[in-house]
Every structure is written in structure tokens, then in C-alpha cells.
Length: 104
Image (tube, rainbow, N blue to C red; front, side):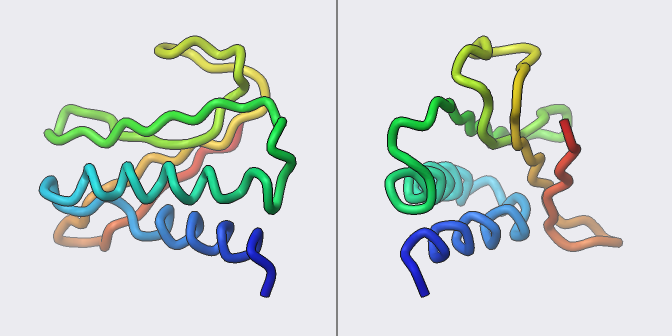
């Protein structure tokens, strides 16, 4: 298996895992940044123009998210261009941890 494939699998597993409890959110942010970084220079060229966001926040009213956005996107608010964003959620009584991924 190639290194780039391992990075994609690591990222896919993180996305599928959803949001852990609040004490592990910093670890999730770190592992997400590592997985995203692992894609570039192996699977994709290191000079690929992208930015990534990780915002894993506690609280029922907070909207946590992570993903790739076009490098010209603002640091907050609406993002444009090609993007891949996921919204990790914690488990509830009726469903396990998950990460919805809207298409844009």
C-alpha cells in the first residue's frame, strides 16, 4: 500500500469517527491536521493551493467542522471554490458518532 493511500485512509477514518467527547477534541484536531498534511507531498503535489480549517468546539450550539477550502477563502464565514468540509457530530441515543459531508 502506498503512503498516500495510508493518508487518505487515516483521514477517512477520522471523518467516519465523528466527534469524540470534549476531552479528546484537541487530539482530534491534531490528528486531522496530520492526516490532511500527509496527503500533500504523497498523494497530491506539495504546491497544491489549499487551506484547511479545523474547528472542533464544545457545546450544543456550536457547529464544529473541518476540511479543505480554496486558499483564497476568508478565514471565517462563507468559503468558495472547490471545498471538502465535514461536520463531526457526537453520538446520541439513536445514532453513533458521525460526520455529515454536504457537497459543494
